[in-house]
Amino acid sequence: MRAAIAGFLHESNTFSSEATTLRQFEEASLHRGQSLIPVWEEAHHELGGFIQGCRDHDFEIVPILAAWATPAGPVARNTYEEIVGDMLSGVARSGRIDGLLLALHGAMVAEGFPDADGETLGRLRAALGPELPIILSLDMHANISERMIENATATVVYRTYPHLDQRERGLECARILDRVLRCGGRPVQALRKPPMLIHIVRQYTGSGAMAELMEDVARVGEADGILSASFAPGYIYADVPEMGCSAVVVANGDCSLADRMADRLERFAWDRREPLNARLPDPATAVRIAAETPGLVSLMDCGDNIGGGGPGDSTHLFAEILRQELSPALVVLYDPTSAAQCRAKGVGAMVEPVVGGKTDDRHGQPIPIRGMVRLLAEGRFTEPEPRHGGLKFFDQGLTAVVDTEAGHTLVLNSLRVMPTSLQQLLSLGIDPGLYNVVVVKGATAPRAAYEPISARVIPVDTPGITQAGPESFVYHNRRKPLYPLERDS
Image (tube, rainbow, N blue to C red; front, side, top):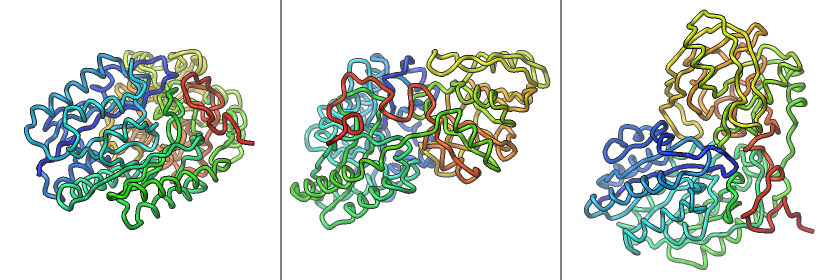
């Protein structure tokens, strides 16, 4: 049996002013054919799970394409067409294939295609024919559409946030493909979309109502006749009709069973809609709490969540830290201009850059600092442990570490990187345990890395294009009603 492997993943924030182009994919990860194998085979990612699963089930691997870029604005039309065109060309050149293992994000928006992942699946289905099995993996933040479900044979969604089970889900996809090809499996799917949104910090699967929901997903997935069960909280930063939660159940040939189990998950989530929402402290309150807390406090800058498309250069929390004179603080900012200025001066030089706040006026103002350049680095690092996103290799570009006269440390990088790995700091010789507070450009995804070293983790309701609650945004394309924007009587 010959199994093709492909992936095209992007989480697209429609409130972002930064379009995602081919350059962003090339900077992050874009590999065609056999070159994708060494990049992904050991990664804690579904693509790594696909590769291992093919080997476990004695499938000949037919690698097509793997493209991933850091979340940002919608994908430019020409970039989308080029990558999908390369994927289709790769399939056409591959000869006979018996199935496709496909990794999509589920919240990609491209210029002209609000449901870009549905468009990709539609084109692949047209090319491959109605019978060839396409086993699809999706991120938990997928805004799942009927078109995705119609064109996939079976759909599998991550079950953890932070996403630590991606490789496991890739293995699950391979098992389903083996069951279809060798054991007569006949997947049928049911999709339900409860009229609700889940607050980003309540999507954490380690405790609370979300943990209860994912436990029920596991129970459904283990029921007789069920091949897979999933629940996606969705992605509130894409203003599209499919925005919001989704339950997907894959049964073996029994449509009625799939429907009943999907109904069950929908009711389970709806009954917990209130505890699945939250209110967070503002920057002033969060910094005050941090000042009163012994040990390291990680402040999650929810409004500048790089994993949700944030620019990475918000200064709202840093400005509040300076105002309240909380020291020492460790802050990472995406600021290629300031990093270049530091390189021009050199290690040991005194510098006076104006840092952050350069992307737009929603993420604070640039802040002048004065300090010494401690280190300059190329910014590449490796994460050996399972972390959110499943990546193994990272590149934050030219990076400068500056120790300020006020006692703070600024890490100024040139490529936006999700702060899901402590190696981002450790590779620079920085011990975060030496600080009272660290500003982390995320909401929930960084918890796997930062929670073990923190006395307390505080998600903060900072302004920005990834502000934590949906109440902060004006939507034009979403369906109605959606709790909590429209509350039930």
